[in-house]
Length: 104
Image 1 (tube, one colour):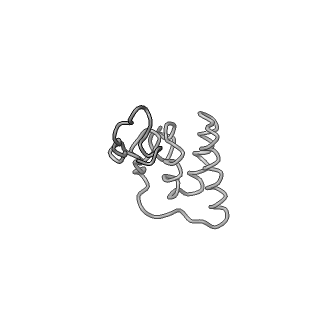
Image 2: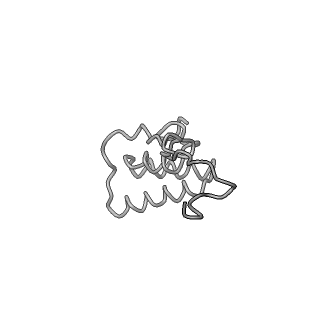
Image 3: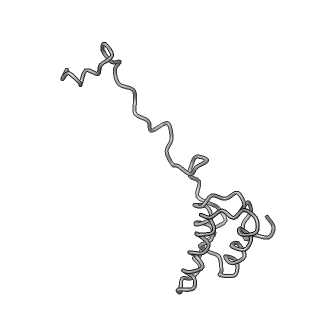
């Protein structure tokens, strides 16, 4: 959206919002909070924004660096798990029971 500090805020995950707001000034975070309350009212996002405002009020400073690129979690839900890391299947069960059940 044009009225938010980063594009696609309305569809951003909580983790993306956490990552992207670290470099924002207080006014920008307040703007995001107002936008969220007016549009989506996603409670987890509101809590992240309120927490960041409290951190800024307590003396935190916006981080340096470019926060425009969000972390890529690898899946739609942000999980870094991939099917490539799955365990290989073991030998077939004998008579419906695992051999380890009977010790060999």
